[in-house]
Length: 334
Image 1 (cartoon, rainbow, N blue to C red):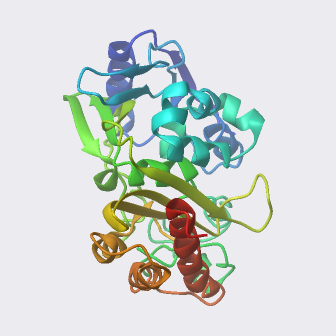
Image 2: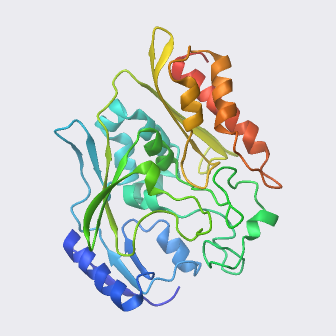
């Protein structure tokens, strides 16, 4: 770990000002906000992250879950994962998010990790986490060792010749199916970004995982008005039953009307370079009868653009089966 400047911010304005000042002095790329630190400290110890300035935001008033007059729910960026998973409003109306959080990491990590940190956590690709290996996400232009290397756990959707790393978060998959909105404050003011537009596929810029600019601070995430008639399921398939990242996961929000699907959202985890919204599957399922045959058609469509590597081709069939079974659970066909 390298030496760094430490700043403790008391307000959002102080945090943004400190980030802006450091950005001017350091060209913007070497500033990090710190809250739970469950990912950042690990990466600093590995010399993958080498910030010159670390801004502590734990004193910011961003640890509340508040219902808005519009019916939306506002989740502060500093709400701990454990608190979010067990919040009564989340459990009652956004159970998908509670399920996903409860299946992520360990109890100790969930007690420390924050909503904002989980949103922004880096890939677990072994080549990204080893500064002796080629990784375009870490050092642009160095190559992607994973493509010819150990890629069993890596992405099959949204990949490019420059990067095949997966987004590791269970929470992000649930937020994608729930159509969350990310609230950001930076030196030019505040803005709102839909969750599907927030994350970026690698393309030719694998070092960019999201649309944040240097010094931007995620302040909260909002969930739309609840859908009380919906059934919500998060199904996670992994190598072992606990403390393991998904090989494939499916987040489902569905409503039925007279045995037809009147509303459907499907998001996938463990298979995409970003939390993957399965739009093609949704198109097939909308207004379709509830049946295993239609579920299978939707699953095939969801994986139609998959690009397997040398060791992860099994994920295509695994993800299809994950989607079908999750839909069966959500509609009580299972």
